[in-house]
Amino acid sequence: MSMSPDQPAVTVLGLGPMGGALSGAFLDAGLRTTVWNRTPGRDRELVERGAVGAPSATEAVAASALTVVCLVNYDAADSVLRDAPVTDALKGRTVVNLSADTPDRARDTASWADAHGIRYLDGAIMTPTTSIGTPAAVFLHSGPEGLYREHRPVLDALGGTHTHLGEDIGRAAAYDIALLDLFWTATAGYAHALAVAGAEGVTARELAPFAQGIAAILPPLIEGWADDVDSGTFSGEGNPITSAVSSMAHIVQASEAHGIDAGVLRTAEGQARRVIGLGHGTDGFMRVTEVLRRH
Image (cartoon, rainbow, N blue to C red; front, side, top):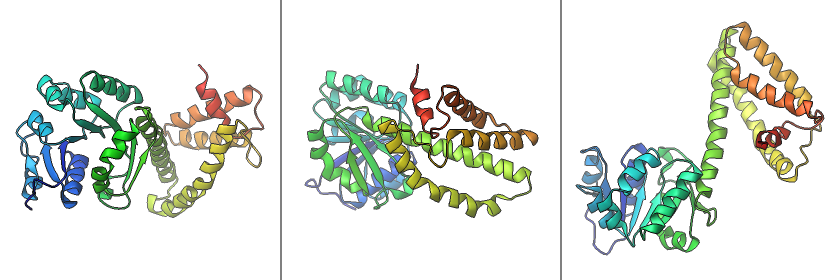
């Protein structure tokens, strides 16, 4: 594919699975796409599709007004962006950082960018590589709204939905951390459930349809619990936390009877018992959030 000088331009730093998917989506949308990766040769397939492979990060960022960064974390991103020649080349240009890290790291990088005359947006990708360029992709962004709107037409090439969460640069990372907390805790819970089931002679395939049934119960509960937490009501009607503790104790007992580590459930049970000890035994399990926030 040949790229016209009149086409919108974008640079992508980082060509791991996600960075490669982002670059491919930009190419498919007809954008002039410059790519760079620390490991030589990783850009070969993208170059064959029409991307420009830059020999250095400095030349890569100089090729476009917008640079999208997708590296494993902010240590990796900072090691590239804060290299003096790259920093100089970025002055007056925009960086959209889609690397994953903490809200504080996002704010620190934004402060560094501001001090060096670099326009900066932070972001998070909430869906897998296969979703990029399709309606299923989900992107979160935070930072100056005007800057976000300016570059939204290029970001739209990545497909899916794009949500601007506010001017606080750390807000996208905050959503990312919270949502990944939910994902990995749930994933760990499923792994534990399969271990316990297997110890009782139940295969993962046998359990799977019923596990999906449990997952289907969650969406309306998530909505209701959100209202409970924001309002501080923590309703336990129909399922007080005392009932939850009893259920958790059974899981711990069954797990440890098979020699299976039940540390995660023991922790959750301990938090629930603390709520009860504070006199909230008739409340729902979400009262735990209040306990967790206490210093």
